[in-house]
Structure formats: structure tokens, C-alpha cells
Image 1: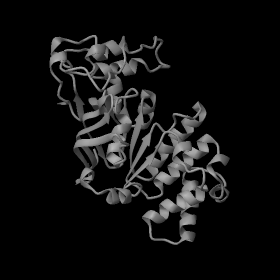
Image 2: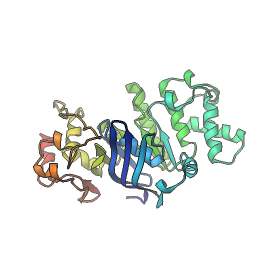
Image 3: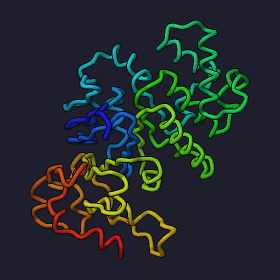
Image 4: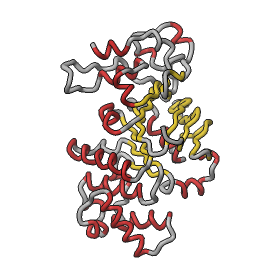
Length: 330
């Protein structure tokens, strides 16, 4: 394993709404090493995007980070001023959002949006920034980059816009790139191209990648370590290869059963029930209302995130008693 770059430690981010307090991220902990591709996976509402927003210091109102630590090379980002975080975003941590139509400004050219970011982080001339912008478009495999610099986002296809968004995220030469469901609004062919691009860039630029997704297939293709979130808490942390062959948490096993496999003729299994209301989440293990292995202990006590084996953690009272590997094989 490489040297630790980022550590999220017991993070709590709640939203204070008129309906009640939404416990969106409730004690999340994990680490990201230098040059490591990591997957943050879970159903919608599991806390993936809010975790990323908390790391970046962009939690929207009425949300608030209440406690915990986000350590970037030992520095706690939660203690930094907004002005310091603005300098850090893009320079140390880049981010690609789901929808480039929302993240790119329709009023400015591609070149303006790239060069503004470049000049924010580097003391260079407009001409030098323009050349760097052209280089960024080449980096993300956009043809005729000089022409694209003069165009507006509406003149580009969806896949091209997302490549521009990736180029902008890389403009500050970050050590970490957070990709928050970056292929959600793209067709299947373009999705594959964007994922392959991100995979190549992560290796070429020797940067860490945090891939946020609900798709275990993307996790398998893109990552070396995976953090499984459920209802604002960590269910399991594992090297990607091991989690597919030997899941330790019932929720992880349920997610894997919902993934189509070309090597097995098996019906896809849906997870019964729904992700809980995080204003009034279940006591104990939050997965227990949907878990066939649930006991009274699961209702009464929150399972700790326990170190098991090498480089693996699980939050389940009964993981030692379960034979999820044989169940997956069947």
C-alpha cells in the first residue's frame, strides 16, 4: 500500500430541515492512499455525495459538518477558513460532478472556463494559460482543441462536455480527483469511453481517484479499494478484488447479487425494502430491517467498524458466523 494521502475520521454531516434533522453522514471513516483508485459505493441516499461535499467544504445549506476530521497529508481541512479551502479546491483536490450541463457555465467559452481555473492556481500570462488549456483538452482526448477553446458548452455533445469538465478538474494538477457519478447522464457507449479516460488519466498523472458510484460494475473496473456506504455509515471497506470474491457484510453481498454477470446464469436479486428515513433511522445496525440475518443484537447495538483480516473492515455483529462466499457461489 502507498502512503496515506487523505483520511476521513468519524465524519458527521447533518441537514437541519423543517421536517427534522437528516443524519446524512453519521460517523464515516476511511482512508485514501497516494495514487490509489478508490470506490465509494452505495444506493442513492447512502451518503456518498455528501461525504465528498464535506471533504471539499461545499456542503449546501441547510447542511452542516458537525464533527470529525478530514486530514489531507495530516492537515485537517475542516479547520481551514473558506478562503483557504477555495485555494485548495482544484489545486489539491479536483472534482467532476454528475451533470456537466450544471457544472459548466453556458455564458462562457470552454477556453474562458479553463483559463480562469489555470490562472487561479498558477501565476502565468493569459497566453500561457490558453496554451495550458489546449494541452488539457488534448489530455482528455478532445479533437481540434484550439477550436473547442472558442466554443460554448451548448455547442458540444454530452460526452464532450464531460471531458471538458474533467479537463477543468485537472487544470490545477490535483493530487486527488473526486468523480461523483460522472457517467450518470451519458449513453452507454460514451459512459465506457469516459470511464476508460478516467482510468487512463489516474495512471498517467499518478493521482488518487475517488470514484463515487452506485454501480458495482464500475467499482470492479475502476478501483483497487472500495468503501461500501449504507444509510450514512460505512458497512465494509476492502480491496476490490476481495470484496467481489468474499463479501463480509450482508449489504455488500446483496449489492453484488444485483449485478449482472456474463459468466453465470443467475437471476438478479433485488434488495428488499428501501433505504431508511435518515430523520428517524433504525436503531442499532441501519441495515437490520432489510437483513435476513438480523437478530435482536442488531436492533439493540450499533456494530463497530471492525478490523478484520488484512486491509479489511466490516460493520456487522455476525460477520464471523455468515458464509456469504458460499451463498454468492450458489
